[in-house]
Image 1 (cartoon, rainbow, N blue to C red):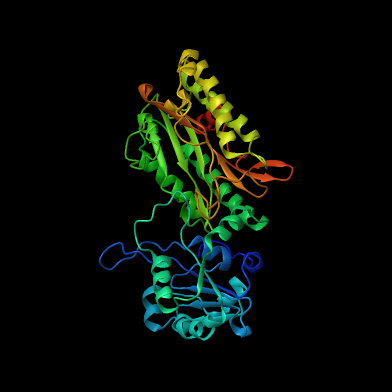
Image 2: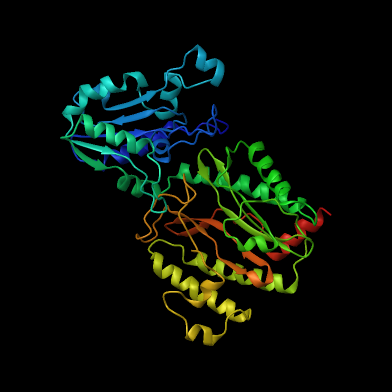
Length: 431
């Protein structure tokens, strides 16, 4: 991996916290991610299952974690299974974890090759009453392919039909939403790399450059600083493209007088940053661009104040909607009559601000957490209001990543330029 190794203490603690949530006489099994074919003889770049990484720190394919705290055989209370390297794999794929390396990374003492998994599981599973298995229960995901966990569940149930099967995901949802100090540091590292990429872009952008050239500047800075790459497909949306929320073509020429909306973030050690900024391509905001930009910035600053422990999701978004409504009225995009006649289920402001203000962030960009629980100390959430005016070919979104602490919140991107004066100063200092 490109990133600096993480202390095994963090993964040991994660497993201990998981053990505390298990029923007695329970066994849990976690699989690494699938390897997905890209073409006839190529695979997509491997991306580790977030839950598996959270519990092990192991960033390698074809791995299994078995946890059985009450196992009568002490050798199998905590076991990691790895793909055994041979000369052919070494020639074609390069280095894979040795058992000693895996011990040092995960803090798990008992490491076996994956060929031993079936025999070891068969020797202990009948001493367990409950079996916890994992699936993707992120409520933004719709299952369309039989991924590895689903196939494994089907296989295990056919072999051992009389055990009590339970879901590991609800436990992981609660654990992963509360970030440890180490996790916060990794997210902060991703944010710091993202900041440097954004400043690099500020000095690069001018009329006539293409969106893909800007994307190249971003990934150059990411990889230069040991990031894995993009946390998600980057959005480099100039002019009217900014009104396409998930624009990914990034193939247009940036025109003088237009704004450009960026939404990108670095991934570092599997932890993610998520940044949005909007800048004038020629380095100077027009009055209209400045007014809309400052309206979004005002909403962002007010929304950030509400990202504290105890805040209720729906109430938070309703309050942000009220603030946004006032700004849209001031900009002449709505009038009071629009608001008085609005359908409460689809408020008038949604015409210009159609997405949510926040989501959890961590090992996934839209991290695994409950949207029905109040905000908690240790949560990291984005704050990303926007105004999109299709008729004017103008779209502006601003986004920072916010950590909730017992004393309030900390903006992990507070050091990234966001004020109009900061943007213009950096852009024009390089011309």
